[in-house]
Image (cartoon, rainbow, N blue to C red; front, side, top):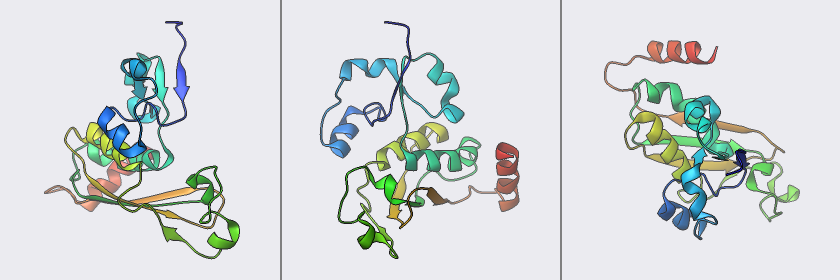
Length: 179
């Protein structure tokens, strides 16, 4: 009502489906009455949608890396949106602010491991975003890993090309999009 825009850095406005939020975050929306005024906000992908909303839900780190990586091929219909495999790695700061046994330096130094396999709360955010870009239901297998570095993120995605699409066409698409 004030005419101001708010960017929420938490997860409160990331998921459209209230049921998904309850399932993955273990609670209800904190401000359900504000969800109609909110939008999921990756400006590189949803700039026009963001313009008309007063609350922008800032995306998670893994979902951002995945969405930006797959957007060109999904939007052009060049890959199958079902069965995408996502292998993501982040530094220990990506695991949150609260110290844990796994993020304690002596425990994570010179080692790395997968965590929350098939149970990471960014999974529905990733699927929701990829579904919007593909125009049809997207499904993923998301495997995050914790690396013994302070920060950084690397996501490698594997998807099947649609019939008739060549690797050369994909390469050109990404060069045109991101160069």
